[in-house]
Length: 240
Image (cartoon, rainbow, N blue to C red; front, side, top):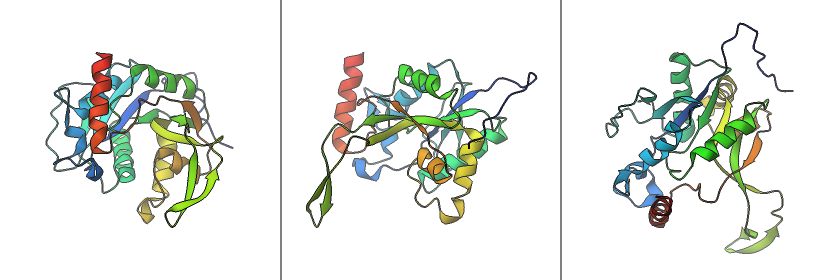
């Protein structure tokens, strides 16, 4: 059974924070530098991501976690904080960022929405929809997309089986959980270098919780490969 914080009449309201791990190098993207800083429509990719969260009034503060030596970003917004505590992996960056949020005054019962910096096509409506779905949930949840294509299992470069896709989902972000619950789940895997943690939901699963799946959008993809930049730019142009 999951324990849900029950506020007393004197308790301050629960807040929502956002955390953007932004310390990766994006080795598969084929760019000269970190992919999150590549320009899209003349603006660094991560700033498109950040703009969606800055529009959502229920987000108390956005923490952008960058590498200690990263000096690319210079943000002039009191609601956005740069934390130079990025780690060797995404999970380590998120874990360090959660610690920074707690040190800055976030409470363990507050919510955090962790979002890939390279998912620059997320919309304020999707963020608000996730908050609406998770605020009353004992665990929290994540945006995800029902698997649309036939799924194959492989052996030695050939099809070994066709896998039932009826219960398969593609995990997206944001992923929204209580700060304390997520921090504890990651802390339990810190000594093994966060082995097996591929996203925040997987950390909660390892801790015995079952995150809620909230339908997302196919446009909320993570820019990963060289061809993804042109697709993301085309979608941004169409929206404009």
